[in-house]
Length: 439
Image (cartoon, rainbow, N blue to C red; front, side, top):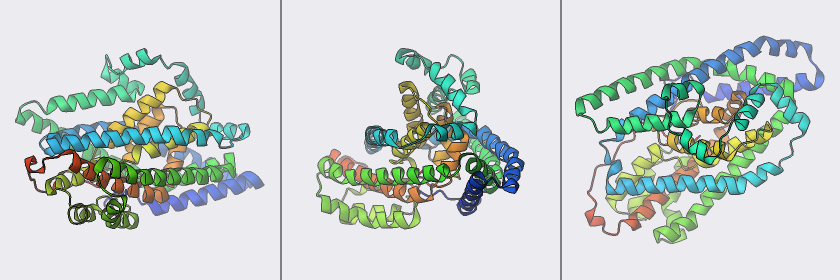
């Protein structure tokens, strides 16, 4: 779903143009040994690395402040009521189902994609992340050790060493505990973390103003180092993501019919107007009026169920996240010959699910940028992550389509679960506080 980028330093079109120009020039220099372009790549490379380091520096603090702010902001909303808990249960269930789908269907397909040893060597030559990833794999504990490691004895040490999942678990525990203190202290904490989050957003926006230059330098280096294989990898990635997102969207129809007690055509008719808006705008927030109208007038859902579950869904539920993120992780790992352990994949999934419920979006991929530390913790080179994030405009359409369909599916199933709608307190529509990004 599209992130609201007004007032930010990021504009996707210049970055995409920079990617195309840089990659094309790099591929041309690689195959024809153009001295001028190779010299330009050497000049721009340091600027690209500085930009990547500056961006990486801000991500984890922004994730932490956003998580605390989101939990405290939602503490007095209807998320913990009967309808809210039911919706949250379905949200988590759909995310788990998406992860299983990506691992079961996508993993075998990715494993069959041809990547020559020379291509792997060329990609790894662009970054030292290959050796870092190998060291992380060797250091992975067994399941029992991994489980124990989730509780950090020193959260500051875990933060400094880049152990993301323990830091996030501590952050959530801290935020939930803060909802139980007196109102004055809770409001003070909320004001502090909200201010810190907004300050970090200003800093991120400053860095993102240099995105076209950073992407140009990065893509020029990748093109000159790898050649046409870089463009091939991008095309394979786009096809992989789009096909899987469409396939999972199709699975939601029989799933909703079975669990929601409605006909396939009946559900399809009710969700179609919101899907049209989603495809046209790439924004689940923009689809909310059509979702509410379809739920109440076409599908005849209980008004309170629709007014609680759907606004909450478009702000905090991103059903595509565990599919697109897992496929991206597996694809990049395959491209760079990174051996992922079971513990790394499990930690990655838990982290992605946690950050997917943070309502505040970030430019350059929105919530996906908040997921950056999860990829780095798994040994993914930041250069590869940024390269694939730059082409997200096309998959973003299918992500939003899936998210909107899943939002309506949750409302339909929830409506059937709550067999006594008269016991549901009618509430006014909860207004979303931010755009809910798809990637």
